[in-house]
Amino acid sequence: AKRIGVLAVQGAFAEHEAMLGALGAVCHELRKASDLEEKPDGLVLPGGESTVQRKILMESGMFSPIRSWIGEGMPVLATCAGLILLAEHLSNDARTCFETLPVTVRRNAYGRQLGSFIAEAKVRHIGTMRQNFIRAPYIEQVSPEVEVLSETEGHITAVRYKNQLALSFHPEVGHDTRLHEAFLRMI
Ligand code: GLN
Image (cartoon, rainbow, N blue to C red):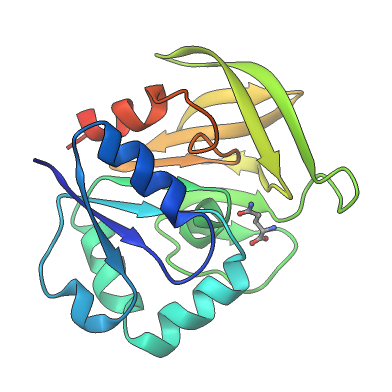
């Protein structure tokens, strides 16, 4: 079975584990540096609060090894806060983290009150999806080598760049497993 390391310090990691488990993958929770001794086949960076996740990554010693994994080409599925952690640039925050994804992301881009909604949009290679947004970021700018997978109401909400698949919305909510299947096929 494919072994997936799921960053499990905060946020919506359990939902990803349930969905990947149902698809036959085995998930390992990454909470501290010693959880990284065994290298997984793929990595999930879940939604949650990116500032909290970043702080724990830095303080726990997990930041550098995970950054190396991503740089070496380990397939990554990043949702929402995870997208923020990958972004090379943030337009409204100085606290970038891994900086492995050449895009500019805006945090809490939809405003606090309008922060949670569902939209329907096409995702390239997959088809139309119901997309759950929860105090979501969106992508303001992409480098030419980044493939835009989805644009929702005029904003980029899903991209692929080499081994990195990053989304503004939450495909782990609900029963549509197509994006998780696409991620597992990257392994
Ligand atoms: N608003 C969160 C942040 O800026 C992201 C929201 C989410 O992951 N659902 O980190």
